[in-house]
Length: 340
Image 1: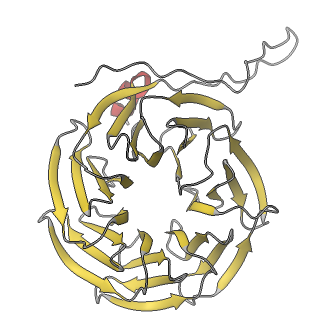
Image 2: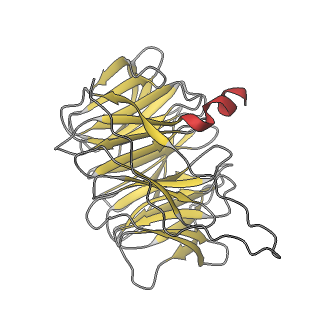
């Protein structure tokens, strides 16, 4: 096991002392994430990491055409899934945790039985590399996007395409459902973020920043009132898509070349977390946009990031010069999280 160094905290600004006559401001609780486990096994860069809905398992996939399943609490390898003929770009869990979906440069979407470790369906229809995938909350639909510039909605049970949305004029980099499955969000290298009605396939809204940077990743906020968008101008933006306004901006990391996702924390303390091309992981306060912590240890671009569904835990993975997956835990909150 490697020796760990404590990551350095980077603050955007010092906390101001309240004046004697003012109401003291709320003191921000700083996270103290530190490395818990280093996972090795992939032989090529890891493209995506996802915790299972119950948080017990971490799934990883990458350019080595493999999906690996890890015990999230011990770091032990549980299983390796093989079947794709080219590198895998993304994975997604069904909401009951029984199935995994994966997408690949082999132009397919594949569904895997987690318990059996076997492939149960291979969905074909995309005409180029498939880059992104997600389940709806009922887990009866999948949405995928890729380099054929389309977004496809799939009937999981029948293994058939329900809709093909001519979504973008460049490769689609990210797709996701909202909390009740009625909406789909997509983004692409054309710089557009689009909101779709799941049932009709109609485009309800198009968001675009004035500078039109390449969009790398998009997700709905947990309450589905906002979307969090990562763009290749080293910026993460929180959009109110109802008003078409950017309401928060998170900066300080480096992202000019790769599709690096950002995600929300799922615990009481609300953070935004992202990888970076300077090999670090950045943690921002959701409301103040202040950098609360910078995690160091990877030796290459941190391309994949995931946050645990119930605990203050982050999974990260890096590119060619590193190839490791790291699990980071905020031990200062572990006792309270166990009680939830």
